Length: 373
Image 1 (spheres, rainbow, N blue to C red):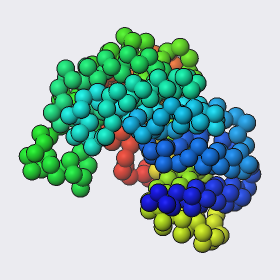
Image 2 (image 1 turned 90 degrees about the vertical axis):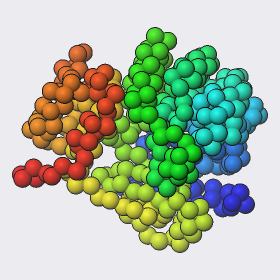
Image 3 (image 1 turned 30 degrees about the horizontal axis):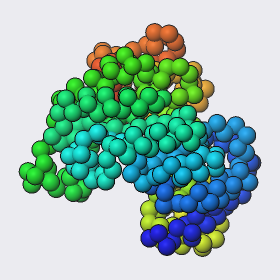
């Protein structure tokens, strides 16, 4: 598949041009994010080409953050120096665990030594914003091992952490291994203990939990991942490339996942209607009711900021309580949400709500719309 990378980069640049040209006005972009975890598959010059295309077709004057995801085992000092000089200023490494046996279960090929090198090289290259992803609830993972992974992650002295509970997806090799008894099933109670331990330890180390899975050093808001805040604040974003997702003008889009199919669709030069690009496989126009529910669901992920009554009223022309009175009262009675102590116009998760976030989010999924809608 590497032989198709030049064609793929051309197709991504072409998609950017097509969608930009279809927009009624020049698009202002606040953040850029290169996802996928294998940046070294693209050369520095290919990243430069994509960034130059973005500069030509978008207004990047307010762009403060250009991020890239990376596998710590697939990069080197020169590569990091090159992408930093190209304009990337935030990098996220998939550390996942410090233990070889847990990395093996997750099918990750790197060693913890690679993480140490990757962070050190990134700092030398001039990256001030560095994130490490960690996973808890891995089959067979002990609380002792989790604490050790946190020890080693904190020792890197970086500004951001993302912590995720392992989900064993149906149809994956891990799901089959658990089903056949080759791996023990994840222990939900133990995973909850690991999450609580992480909350306490990161707070003690000077990190603010600003989202249900994300912590940033308290020094300044610039340490937050501003790209992800775009999702959680229910703001628009455009997705380019195979499998990319977008959300703008109340329309959710998802591109085809296959590289060759993506290239083929881009090269067809079919007319499009903004914000739907030529490679879109799924396009959903959300109703006002859908948008209201999603606003609540993603907003409650912001554990520090919470959900703003004023923003809800401004966007939808109705008060939050008039639409979701039953759900809000239920969640308050369950001790899962509270009025924000510093901002009485917002609601946020309690500590218990952080532990049982899915119960909160479920209250805003699949509800029947009110009769007046």
